[in-house]
Amino acid sequence: KAGVTQTPRYLIKTRGQQVTLSCSPISGHRSVSWYQQTPGQGLQFLFEYFSETQRNKGNFPGRFSGRQFSNSRSEMNVSTLELGDSALYLCASSFQLAGPETQYFGPGTRLLVL
Amino acid sequence: GQQLNQSPQSMFIQEGEDVSMNCTSSSIFNTWLWYKQDPGEGPVLLIALYKAGELTSNGRLTAQFGITRKDSFLNISASIPSDVGIYFCAGYSGAGSYQLTFGKGTKLSVIP
Image (cartoon, rainbow over all chains, first blue to last red; front, side):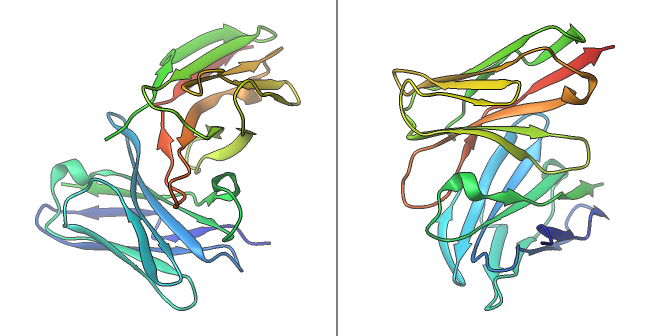
């Protein structure tokens, strides 16, 4: 079965711009989580969606937002990009009512902010 | 936010050697997970641990859930070149979502 897909895989933006990243979960998975990965901070939780509702949110500024569609696909948006937003953005999907160990990660979108 | 202390940050070992890495936390976790990440890929789950004291193996990998629920370790026996990658520990507190708290990773290099 197809894994978690993320598009685009690579992205270059300039400061002040905004960006939208997309995540398509594994078929049948209804929970999607997003993480930011940087060399300095490691993997940090951004937010989690289930059935189009944000279930949890990490400690990131309001410039970071997300949503989930009825087909479980999810997008995250970062507005007014800063240099520090350069990172690998990972999404993970899981089947509800199973534990967190059932999360499957996508390959990530690498964002470079210039 | 909350972080796990993972050590060592990096390791260079000879093929065939055993490897050990660990994670500690100031908070209790209900589940400990160990992941491996290869370049250009997302983390892949290696082992999941669910209760204090649990010792679980997956092939050459063995992991333990610390008695205090604040630590975990991962051992890799008889390392091979394909073990190269970054290993992450992650803790789950069971707070109603699937939010994971990750360590900063141990980068493993295996010298053939």
